Length: 345
Image 1: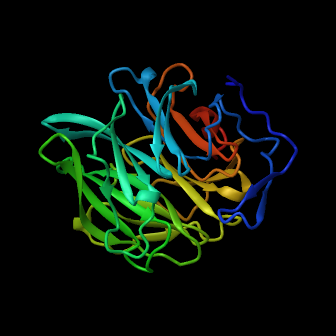
Image 2: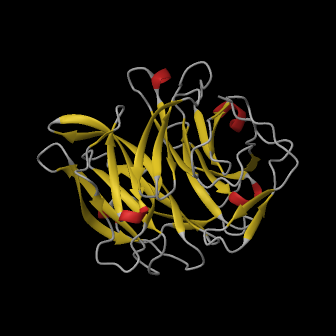
């Protein structure tokens, strides 16, 4: 099945743009790129975004859910060795996916995976770990808007009351109110429903906003305004819609993309953001002066725009956590966090 560590080649990758009218040349992985522990088999169409579900009863049985972005798309579920254990087919261009724990359904705390389904303008929600659908066919998003196609998603669990929210971005939208935030809850029949809580977030208009990440413990949401920087807001609607920070400006070759947050303590850790066109990730401090670029880490994943990371001990292969990044060859790369951490000064 090909679960060997990736060895970078010397050729240059050539990618078709979304419109198929031009080509973009992406360099191969650098000779000193961090090597993954495992690489998944290729998806059918276009691997795009991973999310890591931690099995709290046995962390060695945790799962990775990845999207395969196409009109005939799917969600792929992998074990920690990158082996496919389940595939959810028939989704209409699933874009990004995220995980939350303990949503009350029929009074039972339920872990969920939530994906954006771009061509139907919906969120799709699945129960973990069996991946049974629990959304009554899907939750519409951006209703009444000219630009509706959902792309990025991150789930926020508010510490004060354990309320769970989905923060959703889209392919295009207005200069303000680009992201919409939905509260997820039981519809009374054990299915998830969503209600709009707020519309917030600035947009430069330069490209698009796809990657969104939430720091639950500190209560912040970050998103990549591509070719502009990383924007930071409060995740709790009660704290207002003012932008807290914009950082990373000038630190990326072209696009700043996938965001993931490594938590080494209550407030310590790192924010990793893909420098997509250099096959590397920029590392910023989780707190303090977030305009400080701590490291630029080359990885074997090519042209990555989606990632996730956890700091939980997932067994002998990942004792300090797991970093997962998509690669444009239709795969997902699994990295031992220790190999990433060794590159951070």
